[in-house]
Each structure stands twice: as C-alpha cells, then as structure tokens.
Length: 111
Image (cartoon, rainbow, N blue to C red; front, side, top):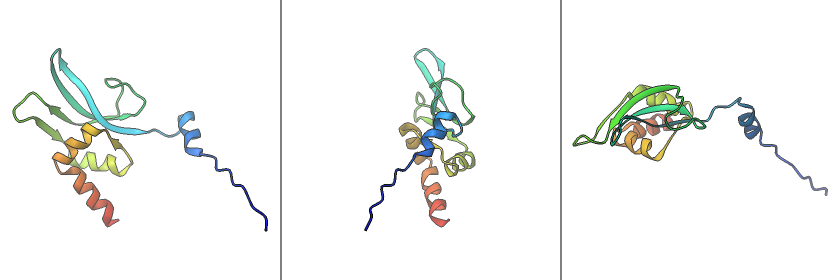
C-alpha cells in the first residue's frame, strides 16, 4: 500500500488576493451630524472603510428615535444574502428584527 499526500491549494485565497473575488458585507454606514448619528444599511466590499465606498444602499436606521426607526428593502436584502453577502452583527440584528433573516432561511431551506 502506498500513501498519498495531497496538498490542497486554497484557490479562494489566491483569487481574493488578486481581486477576482469580492467579499461583500451588509453593514451600517454612519451619516448625520456630530453626536446625532443615523445610519444607512449598505452592501459594501469587506475591505472598504466604514464610511467609504459601497455598492448599494438597502435601507436606513435611526437609533435616536423612540422606538428606533429601521427601514430595509426586504427584496434587496434577501437578494444580496442569496448572493453570499454576510451581515455584520448589528446588521444581522436589524434584519432579524424585521423578520428578513427568517424569510431568507426559509427560502434557503426550500431550495
């Protein structure tokens, strides 16, 4: 019997370094004035800075209102989640609050 050593090359890391694959996140982008924050929920490249370049805006969030105001386009959010966008912890909390994560998981289980 001969044993074989298989060395797996992680092609995804190579593609990421070459810029062929974009790691996309759903996250918050701060807008508003000093000490009066409000946020836009955006889809952005994971390497972009917090308030830097983004792909598209899918909603907004205002923590200063009572209760906090959250408005996210459900269709856009589910579409980006299907394409592999990863929400940050805060974005995932907002998506769950609106029931978008549950709908995404339900559609994911159907297919």
